Amino acid sequence: MLFSNTSSRPNRFLAFVAKEFRHILRDRRTLLILFGMPVAQVLLFGFVLTNEIKNASIAVFDQSKDASSVGLTNKLTSSGYFRLDRNLSSTEELEPAFRSGKIKLAVIFPPDFAQKLQTGDGQLQIIGDASDPNTATTLINYANAIILDYRQQLLAGQSGDAPVIRIETRMRYNPEQKAVFNFVPGVMTLILMLVSAMMTSITIAREKELGTMEVLLVSPLKPIQIILGKTAPYLVLTMINAALVVVLGLTVFGMPLRGSILLLTFECVLYMFVALSLGIFISTRSANQQQAMFMSALGLMMPTMLLSGFIFPRESMPQILQAIGTAIPATWFNTIVKGIMIKGVGLDVLWKESLIMVGMALFFLAISMRNFKDRLE
Image 1 (cartoon, rainbow, N blue to C red):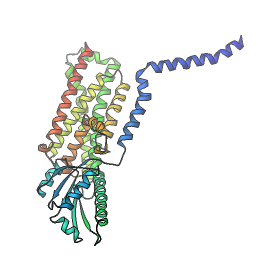
Image 2 (image 1 turned 60 degrees about the vertical axis):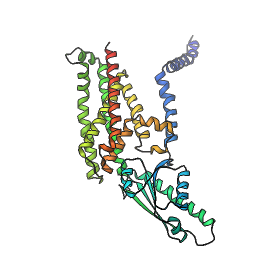
Image 3 (image 1 turned 120 degrees about the horizontal axis):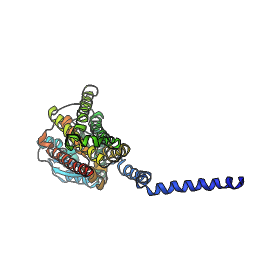
């Protein structure tokens, strides 16, 4: 009798383990966490974590237009690292091109480049957009290496004096190449998104989990008033966070504010409204606080950090990840903050990014309210 009970214990334990396996295999959310997240992280980090930049847009101001300048331009664009975005006709076109954010690098050839190259006095100028200092430094290193290789090709094809190419390098907007110029806008982008969206989603999910949402729904307030009332405090508190980040960037790290502070405030409020709309949407799809926190972290934090251009340049990503990045509000807000604070641009340049964020806010708010009403019915 005792022997029979003792021998049955391993069988009971194995049956218990088998039951737990069946529970896990039936739970799709648990399987997604166990297998989906590692696969997604490996693929994302594998494609995103790279120092190599490809197809960066450049502008060329060729005042010589001879065989040497054209040949060097072709070598730059055929390398795979650069893509010719535009040919400039004057130096006055440089500033608008950089301010628009359409180019990362400019190459300027002086008149009679080929003739000066033959006499050993070839010169050219490279200008980088150092609002993102890491990207600018990488691209200038690429250009220097390609120019050096071009010089070696010329040297191999002649027996006279070695051609000399003197390169003058300039960094626009951030001559000292301070990393904080990229860090402060990125941190602001991340903080505003996480605080606004995550806290909003968790708050509304908590009301549903505790059963107090039904009490609010029978009150005289309309559903839209309940939602706005829940999110209004986070809008104010997140705005204070944004102000603290800007003040610390200006006073402690020497971050410039070359654009309009009113425009920056408006864009921050618009971005927070997008984040709040996302938080409301997540709350309508979440059954409890833990699920809301998980969806916020997985759906917002990782894409904001990896795909928005905050840490890694979007030019180095595969096309599919760049396309996904365009659906992330942080991608557009990061460009807006850099444009206002570092380049001093206005709404005449940033209107497209602002309009996209307005569309995102209205879209997520509309589907969130529809989901909210469906839950009520």
